[in-house]
Length: 234
Picture 1 (tube, rainbow, N blue to C red):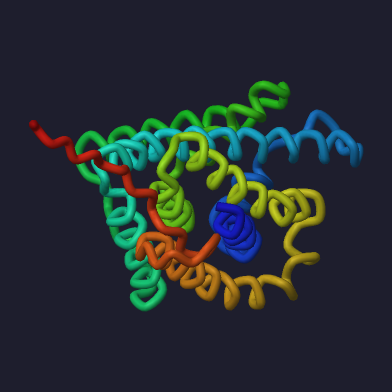
Picture 2 (cartoon, one colour):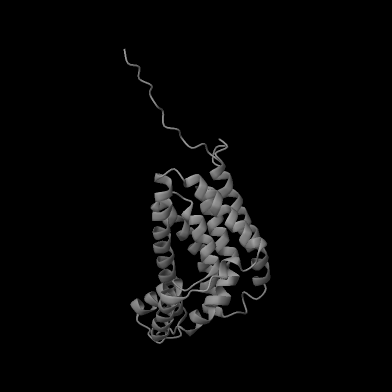
């Protein structure tokens, strides 16, 4: 579990370039009560705290599915399938972002964006936190990749921890971007973009190994077998 949490955190760090590109305009559109550095820092942390909160809730939700798969003995299958999907998402760029919501999902996302737009002008702390929560709920291929990893963790708590680690990896760059704009991150973005696919593949390989039940401590631990007793009738 520790190695996957570390990979989730590094995925968030490497995916920060994607986060800045997708969520950066929203972050810059959120006003601070004043231009003092500490005030802007506090509002930036509140905004990203709301996003982290949503990611943890998403992790708990997907964790219910993962726990169900574990109860019916399909955790290994889930882990291998999620790992394969992550590797395919790198080999086929944009795979996780090709899903276009329709019907009720499309309407729900439209309402979400409308609610986010109405929140952007508010500067109260709870409003900024709520804006971050709404931002975290917007469709995002990188978040989908993290949720695939979270689904394979087997328990609600582990899935939530996985998404928290991922979210924490994205926070430093998003805070710096909001405080200083794109200038500070312009040199780092190309490197982060190159690193993200490698980390997605690494996470995919780790999940495949975990599901393979090879008996390798920490990397591919054996799933405990329930001992059965054979009773004889005399």
